[in-house]
Amino acid sequence: MKSEFSFQNLKYDMSASLVVFLVALPLCLGLGLASTGRTDLVFSGIIAGIIGGIIVGGLSGSSLGVSGPAAGLVVIVLGAINTLGSFEALLMAVVLGGAIQLLAGFLRAGIIAYYFPSSVIKGMLAAIGLTLILKEIPHALGYDKDFVGDFAFTQADSHNTFSEIYYAIRFNAPGAILISIVSLALLILFERPFMRKLGLFRFLPGALFVVLAGIILNATMSSINPAWILQDDHLVQLPIAASAGEFISFFRLPDFGALSNPQVYITGLTLAIVASVETLLCVDATDKLDPYKRNTPTNRELKAQGIGNMISGMIGGLPITQVIVRSSANIGAGGRSKMATMLHGVILLLSAIFIPRFLNLIPLASLAAILLMVGYKLSKISLYRTMYKLGWEQFVPFVITVAAILATDLLKGIAIGMVFAIFFILRKNYRHAYHYVTEKNHDGEVIKIRLSEEVTFLNKASIQLSLDDLPENSKVIIDGSHSVAIDHDVLEIIQDFKMQTAPNRNIKVETIGIRDVELSSH
Image (cartoon, rainbow, N blue to C red; front, side, top):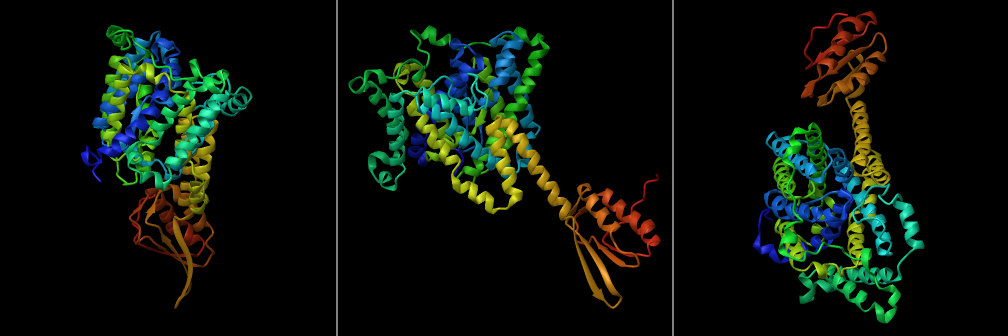
């Protein structure tokens, strides 16, 4: 399976691009509104989605990763606009952040991606799946007080993830519930094997029929119950330009005069760091979901993200990262190459220009059903079973990551999960620094300590305790012949024990494959 353009897979990528477009559209609009706090700047999210699809998608080495505006940057962007004083000054910071990412790619900083434990990455995927389900339930019930794409526990409307569901049940919209039920039924139907055998439905995604069904259902709601008709904030709200000039006005230039403000550089650096970390996390997660098990070159990804952010900032777009929701939707819809990512960006652009009025007929309940299915696929029960079978060292960091992301947000949750994963790694290192066994030979009982392949300063304490516990008048062999590397701190402990402690306790020490070191004076 080739990772670059493949016209052989175009029919699959076309189908997947439509699904990604339908997932990306409400997210781009929601994040555009949430990040700026202004309805006149909501198009900034669409710009970021277009650039993330066409530009980043084309430059990236990721076959299935999809980039665009991200929920993890909302608080930073909103705070930066208030600090810098204008949206145009923020755009300048986005350009600078992109330049820093580009430089980081050339400096090979992408290697950071390989230091995220698998248990944490899988926990992130499961948590995002659960978050999607919990966050989309209110929209499926017709309670659209919060923007689509808010993944934080404490929400913009002052509710939290669970209280929002409570209010959604109390103040539901029957029309939205009907559309959601029909939409979910269609999505489940399209997942059945026999549907894929039918020519018409083999390559047209179920999500497309869900949206069409939602529009038709809402249009005919007057004959069912006029009070059930969905309007205004229950529908997609893409800005509509009355002329070409007005459409061009949706794009904005950065304020180059803001370069004299030191806060712009601080904001640019902050955006670069957070966007890069979130991108690298998503790259790792997307590669794990890729059915063809392709690996994304992370340094190239940082360069692509950097160029994308520079262009997005130059024309009025939000900062960009690779995002797992759109990437997993791409994978679930059968995308095979980066063509799907680029095509979704093209569809976003053409739709914003030519059919915004039609898009504004789409009920958010229909799109919520699509996102509910994406969430279910990311957080299947089988994933929890698999992680449990791997043992506590994998399961505990996994569960902690899931709980932490649900209770906070993506980056904070990942940080908490990393702490627990590192604890288990250190614990394992502590316990498996060596193999301790008592053997019998012609000299009587001999204690043999065989050091592991890698012995670092993290093993210093456990080795010291074992040497201290050796019985007096015994014989011990410390074997380092199988070790590739032994930290100087450990060598110093062994040397100190051999030359000073052991003679005082009448312990005979023989070392194999362990070089002598000069003891530091005290």
